[in-house]
Image 1 (cartoon, protein in one colour):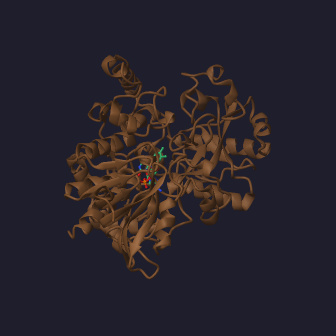
Image 2 (cartoon, rainbow, N blue to C red):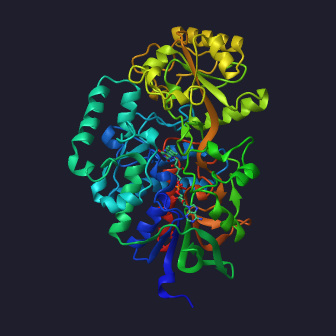
Image 3 (cartoon, protein in one colour):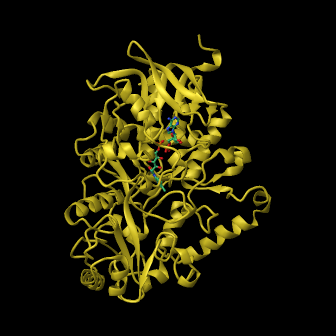
Amino acid sequence: PLKDEQQFDVIVVGSGAGALLAAIRASDEGLKTLVVEKTALVGGTSALSGGGIWIPDNHDMPKAGLRDSIEVAFGYVKACAQGLASDDRVLAYVETARHMARYLAQIGVPYRCMPHYSDYYPNVQGALPGGRTMDPLDFNAARLGLEGLALLRPTNPGQLIFGRMHINAFQARSMLARERKAKWMLMGIMARYFLDYPWRSKTRRDRRLTGGQALVGGLLAALRQRKIALWLDTPMESLTTDAGRVTGVVVRKDGQALRLQARKAVILGAGGFERNQAMREQYLPQPTNQAWTSTPPDANTGDTIRAGAAVGGKLHLMAHTWGVPTLDVPKEEKFRPLFVERSLPGCMVVNARGERFLNESGPYPEFQQAMYANHAKTGGAIPAWIVFDATFRANYPMGPLMPATAVPDSRLRKSWLGKVYWKGETLPELAAEIGVDAAGLVASAARMTEFARTGKDLEFDRGGNVFDRYYGDVNVKPNPNLAPIQKGPFYAIRLFPGDIGTKGGLLTDRDARVLDEAGKVIEGLYCVGNNSASVMGPAYPGAGSTLGPAMTFAYRAIAAIQGKP
Ligand code: FAD
C-alpha cells in the first residue's frame, strides 16, 4: 500500500507554463496536487521564452481599440491547421484562451495585448494585424524571493542587455526598429538596474523579470503561495494503469524508483522530444541534430511522449517542429534562435550557390521549412548563410554581434571570426571564405540592392505585408525590410534549421484528454504543451501559439477533471 505522501489527486509532470498553470488551477479547485520536474530548475523552455501568448478576442483588445470574434479566429486557425487539428479542438482553444488569460491575471500573471504585432499569416482570411499576441507585464522578482528565484531557470544571455538586464517585447521592438525614443529607454533600463543597490547586493539577476521569466516567475510565485508540492530532480519514468485507466506514475527520486498514485488524473506537460537525437532521426525531416534546438540541453527528451504511447496514446504531427533558424555561439549552452534580425534591411539569406531561396522576413517556421525544401533541391541550404554589409553591421545587431557603432569588429572576440561570423572585404572574398559560389552571391546582392531602391522584392516579396514590416527599420524607405547590400566589408553567419521545440506528441481531445489509436479517451491521462500534438497543426498562426495553447488546455483539463463544462 502506498503511504499518504505518495497519494495525490492530480500529478503534473514537468514545470513549463502549461504544467504550472494546471497545478495552480488544480490546487484552486481544492485538489491535492504534486508537480514532478526532471531537472533541478523550474520552467523548462517556457522560462527562457518570450512569454508571448496568442489569445484571440482577449480582454485587452478593446482597450487598444481592436475588435475580434471567436468565429473569425476559428476560421483563421482552421485554415492554418490545414486539417491536421480537429475543428472541435480548435474551437475549444479559441473559445477558452481568453478565459485562461483572465485567470492568469487573477493568479498574479497579468498580460497586455500587443496592438501592432501581426498574426503570422496576414494573407490568410481571419488574420489580424495586431492584438491577439499578448505580452506578460514585468514581474518583480522580489515577489518570488531569492530562494524562489534560484529555482527559476534563467533566460539565455542573448535575451538580456549586456548579459544582465531584462527587456520586454515592446522595448525590444522599439530598439530594433530604431525608434527615436529607444535610446532614452535603454538608458532608463540601465539606470534602474544599476541604481537598484539593495537588490543587486544580493544577486546579479535582474529584479525586473520580463517575457518567459515574468510568466514562469509569476506562476512559480503562485505555486509557492499555494504551497503546492514541487519535486525537482524527479523524472517521471512510466505511467501505471489499472484496467486501461491511468492510475499514477513511477518517478525516480533520490536514485530510487517510486510509485505515486493520482486519484483523479496525471497531466503530462513535460515538453517535446527535441533533445532526443534518436527520436529526431525517427520522426523529423533529415538531416537533423539535437544541437540545433534552442531549448535547454537537460530537459526535453520525449520521455513522457513515449510513456503515453506505451499505454496506448496515439502520436500525431511527429514530423513537425516549432521551427526557427538557429546559430551556434561557442561556449553558449544552446544554439541561439534568430527571430528578428533577419528581418532588418540590408541582409539576405543564401544557399551554397549564393542564391536567395526565401523571404528573410517571413514567419520563422516557414524559414526552417524553406531551408529543408531548398536543401532537398540543391544540397546547399543546410547550413545556409545570412549575409550583410558594413552598413547593416554598423546599425543593427545580428545574433551575438552588437551593432558596430556600439561594438566594432576590433572589440569582438577574436575566436568568433571563422566560428560565429565570417568576413571579406569584397563579396567574392567572403564567398571564398564560406565556400559559396561567388558569382551567385554577387548577383544576389546586386538584385537586393535594386529591390531596395524600388521597394519591391520581385523574388520573394520581402516587406510585402504587415508581419514582415513589424521588425523592419521604420526609418528606411520605401521598404523597411530592404536596403542595399553593397558596402564592404561583408559578413556572413551560418544558419541551421533549428527549432524552439517539437510540436508532435500525444493526440488529445478538446479537454486535453489523451486519445488512443481508436480515438477513445484513455481515462485518467491528460496532456498539454509540446508533450501533446499541437492544436495549430503544422502552422504557427501568431506569436504565442505554443504557450497560449499549453496553458489553455491545462485550464480546460482541470475543468474537465472537475466535471465542469
Ligand atoms: P517546457 O517549457 O520545455 O517544459 C517541459 C519541462 O518538462 C522541462 O522543465 C523538462 O525538464 C520537464 N521534463 C522533461 N521530461 C520530464 C520527465 N520525464 N519528468 C519530469 N519532467 C520532465 N512560445 C510562445 O508561445 N511564445 C513565445 O514568446 C515564445 N518565445 C520563445 C523564445 C525562445 C528563445 C524559445 C527557445 C522558445 C520560445 N517559445 C515561445 C516556445 C516555447 O517556449 C515552448 O514551445 C514552450 O515553452 C513549451 O512548453 P512546454 O511546457 O511544453 O515545455
